[in-house]
Length: 489
Image 1 (tube, one colour):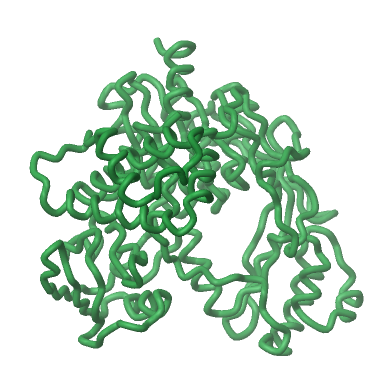
Image 2 (image 1 turned 90 degrees about the horizontal axis):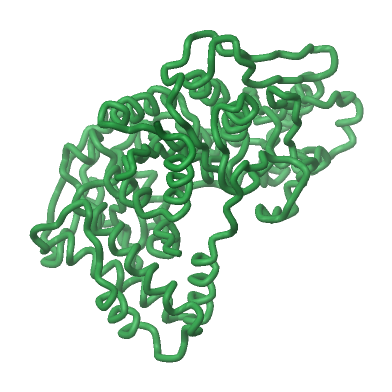
């Protein structure tokens, strides 16, 4: 089985994610701590007497006592990063950065962004910002220098291509919206696939644009790919459910603090795609709002849910303002499926690691169970066995992709690397006998897919790269075959 999406070791993607909920007590101002106590006493889903909260000397101890890893305290800086990570917009250039040989490089460029208009490319090396060299700066520091107020200018110095020519690009920072639907593909079988990475302010609109294009080009069925979707804005997940369910259908039941009553969300409009055969693909990383959507469609019998048991985050959070720009994201309710199923996996202490693959009482159970990805396990085994040579292999892959993107003519979006070339790259970088024989074939497949994805992304852009991944994904293919066999007219 080939799994093109297992390319985590190729580039270290940088989001400047700060570990939230780990704020040391001395750094939390007293007025913020007091406001945190007040907010938890009045808004937390499980009533807590305010007096009982005074026994905790630090914010960290107070939050740990809740056994709720989803209730977190944000400093002002952490709050800004949280807003970016959950799909809200920020002032920037619309490029994602990575690290290669201790150099910060452009990984991809969002279509229509300031970076795209300035013709930045994958593999461009960032060497200066505003005329000042960035050598020695951390990636997070470089990101901080590139981001800034909307409407202000930023000038990047870049080294480009195999010739390492120097390029300067001046861009006006724009309101960059992190896309919720980063990829879509129309399979040869007539099944359209829409990847929903998270639920942000524009998710439903982005999904409609993708589905309309697919249906207009002959799609006879669709797959919503919610794998590793951590959730986000609940209203957007409900908006997507309304695209497929009859008016008046139950979507989710929300139960808050005792005495606050129960809220039931229903569809209020006629569906846009009432008869389009549908499947939903989930896995152990599908959580929160993605579970709401999958469960609503499953309970209504509107879609086949395929994949693996979802994470089991059956709680609703709200971000409450605290003094000085601080905030707390706290659990205010639990949600239940239209048929009354509670899918929360239970207490989740913040200091305890969770094995997402371990069976549990919550989550959404698929109608069509797809076993664990055996190819990924074999590649992980090969990586462990290769040791330091694994880094050399990844760098060789990136070198090959950069050279191909820079020099090859006649490239198409259907680019496929031949197996012999992939074999040669492995042989040049990984000592003979290092990789267990049982993992060798899977590793060759992985290199083929990694290079195919990279070349398509480098030459044609991030959207085309995402489509390439979906077209080559074995789980997508299996679900598409199920739709083709059972549901297509």
